[in-house]
Length: 204
Image (cartoon, rainbow, N blue to C red; front, side, top):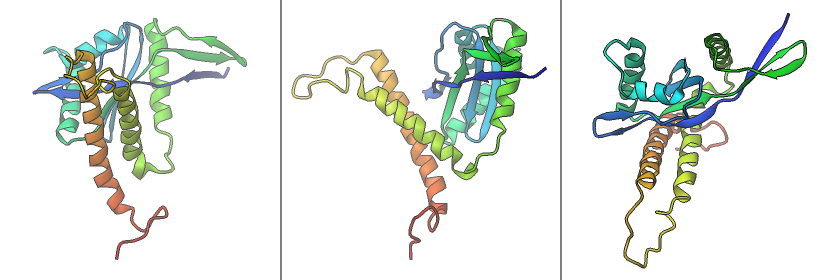
C-alpha cells in the first residue's frame, strides 16, 4: 500500500542575538515539526507545543543535550554572521489509496512520520546548490523588510516630534537588521565567485 505525506514549510522567523542572549522566534502553542537552518547546517525536531519548543531552544536546560546542541549551532552561525532561520510544519495530509485526509500532528508517531519525510525531502538535489544560502538569505531579507515597512514606526510623520516606538516594531527592526546583515555576508561570499557566470561580465 502506497502512502504519501504532503506538507508545507512556513517561516516562523529568524534567530537573533540581543546582547549575549540567543533568542529563537516565538511560535504558536500547536503541535508540529520544526527546522533550524544555521548556515549550511540543518537540524530537525518535533514538539507537541512549538511555542514551548522555541523557548526550550532559547534557554536549554542542563539535561537537554539536543536543545543545547541546536542552541550552540545557532550561536556559532550567528557569530559568523550567517543567517539562522526557523521553519515549521503545523498541518499535513496523508494520501492513502488516492484519497487525501488531514493528518493530525498531535500523536507522536504522526509527527515522527512527517519529520522523517521532511528530512528526506530536504535531501533532494538542488540544481543550484552553491547559491542555496544566498537565495535563502535573500528571501528572508525580503520578508523582514516587508514586515518592517508595515510597522507604525516606518509610517511615522518625520516632520513632527518622534513618538515612542512600539516594542514589537523594535523587534521587527532588529530582525530586519539581522537578515540584511546576513544577506550582505552571503552576497560577499557567493557573488565574487560568479563573475563570468550567469550572464555577468568578467572584470578585467
